[in-house]
Length: 246
Image 1: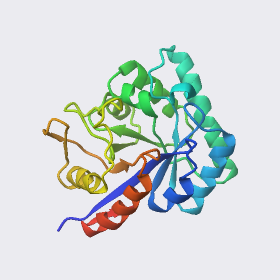
Image 2: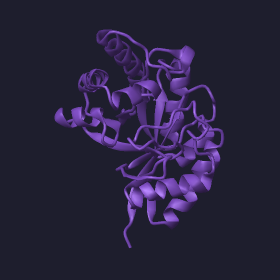
Image 3: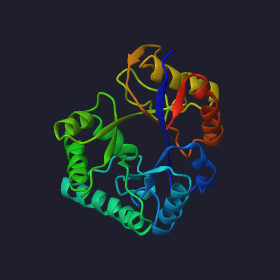
């Protein structure tokens, strides 16, 4: 019987103050660094929690738009977006250096993540930011995306990410949060969703179609209302299905 290794990640430092509960069930985390949420004090607190739990730390930069929590596309010049993303990541890196911890990965947030999956101009900005970082780091990307292709061309290390608690459209884009069926809250549905993606390398879309997908890290959003319940359940059930979290 095949065995699998997966990473479970969550977006944290977003003002919910639930990190002390979530960290025990994560293997990596994405820390908001001031664009859509977060400040230096929050970042430092979450970094220390992650360090204590031996959770890999990633930067979670966003369009600079706290008003909309980074979930709306901001039309801004590429140079300004580059400067903002660089500033956000640098703020987290300064804290990581003080705590003697390495930056493991970068994962864009919200509208930036979704836009970079299909828009070459936006993806290029993120790629240039990643290239500017002194030490090699992983970039979390969706399978089959524009940003994946560009990262491969630039020989940037990528990790395929999928979403445990979100429904997919047939083109592998996420169902809009404006729709009632965007988020999966039922822990049994979430488990089935993840099992299908890991073992079958398929995802069942909202139209009932099975679409090919690859992923080795799975996100449970920290602001999903029952995120802790879902994470606990996955940590119990995935190993029973020969899927180990690492």
